[in-house]
Image (tube, rainbow, N blue to C red; front, side, top):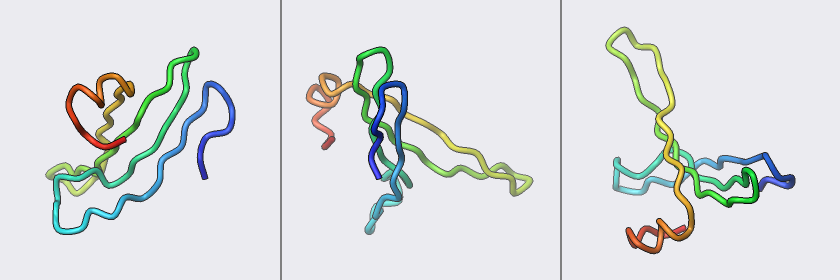
Length: 69
């Protein structure tokens, strides 16, 4: 389900296919009138605990790096 209100976002599970570098989750958000594309990776510490690494980019940045939205 996509975000529905300003100041909110959503993440969806991503099909990584055969590329482990693809994000585990992807999504969109809008904050202060600026729309963002979101990417998240599940990372593991040496002790087995997990954390999410996040990337926020604007559509203009996406066009410059040629990554699909």
